[in-house]
Length: 376
Image (cartoon, rainbow, N blue to C red; front, side, top):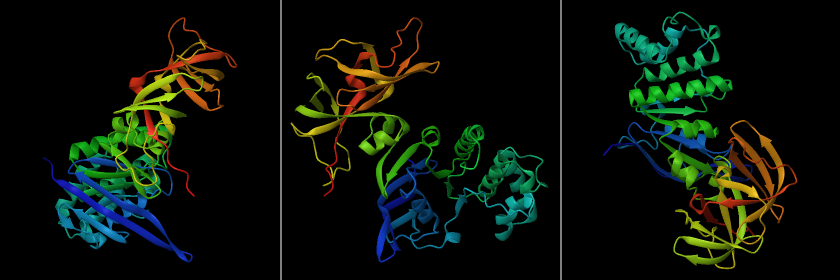
């Protein structure tokens, strides 16, 4: 069993605003194992960066505790935590060469010149910046500057590597390359890493586990597959990837299977999910109440119009061929809009706009989530 690198226990942060207080992080608890890469994902203002800053020591929690490698670091100063932080804006010294930027922390720590030279060169080799020691940040591309920032952290051998939107200033192609490089280095060195991003593709492709946050709270923690295939809230289902959320009325309940009445009078059954964090703001399933059917666009099958109760019926609002698949937008009888992504095959029928169609849902790939009560 791996050791814990980080343990957050009910960490909360409130800030004073005007004549009141705002809760930026609300009782966040998380355990991170040694060598694990955990990504905090969520929209702007959800609390992910504030959580990272509390782990680093730039902000102190209002309540709760932060334990790093078995030691309580809740109120420990930044320089005593042995944390590496890679910022969004690189934060390189423009008047220093690459070598001196990377060596800065080691010199401040009082290490011997020979050890510094060896460590800096090893770090630059790791990030692919051999023979750049005498260049200055202004002579480097954005991707090269980010590598220098990464080397400067790696050379200090931190207990935790914290990264806050480190690739947001790079173009799309370079971001894809750099996230691969960062993941490769993290695995090679076995560094425990916390990575903040609002980019789903970064989170899904890089992390061992993803922490999805919303309004200061943790909505769900899990692997990319778990979060995509089994979201535990409507927020997660809607935020991760693309999801169709169809609101229907519950007709029956049996263990983990729920039945609903379709818009054309038929009955559809699929598995239901009871989220781990159900509280007073979430109602459980009840016959006669609404539930939300969650289905990914790629899990739908569009067929010629059949009518009747055995299928879902819709009208094609948009039909776009994108090479590998056809993307449909379908309008349901109650005017809800859903999407269907159908893989392209030779001689397949492509439906046109305003054409009536039916669509089928595989119950294995469908789930129901309780709907939140309306706030008073």
